[in-house]
Image 1: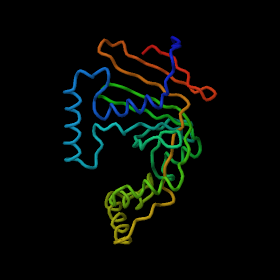
Image 2: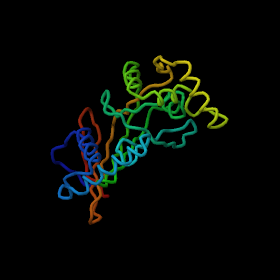
Image 3: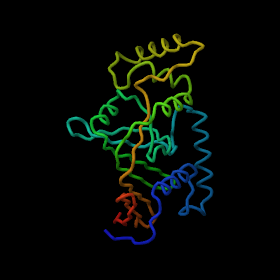
Image 4: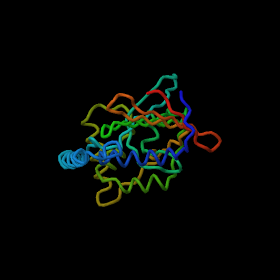
Length: 227
């Protein structure tokens, strides 16, 4: 591990810069290859038109790792919804498996991987619940199909099959026909407040760049790691 004594930037600001570049396929590393950036954006628009429900090639998908009551690792994908209360936010059902795991042990890891350009960001920290006001504000921004599916059943609960799920969703739509579907009390947001953030960037010569940030008494300290 090599100590890097250069001025330490804000790692959250660096993440947001990488996140923005992941949306366009552009960065300093690829700045001369504007065709790549243009091509990525065209592909995303086409995929969004054909598969409006998908997030293919979008940078919002991240892997959330938690700890089960048996001290086993558990991981799944979540959608990043921006920086909130100094942390990385996402939304889910509090009664889901991940919600119960976070209630028992709020320590978690969030990992982003982007292909254009090849980069990975790992965030270690503690998870906090977002306010009810923030949850309801985001709930109102979701489309009605999404709201009905989330309100129909408790995430991770056992159902007989897709037919039961469709029936329950239709019941919600019928019950609130012409009305707003209310945000369930069991649904809301979390933010992962970072204690460590690690950035990895792939290079053509295989000498990849990797930097590790640790929050120490309110100050971010950076070291360079072997890739």
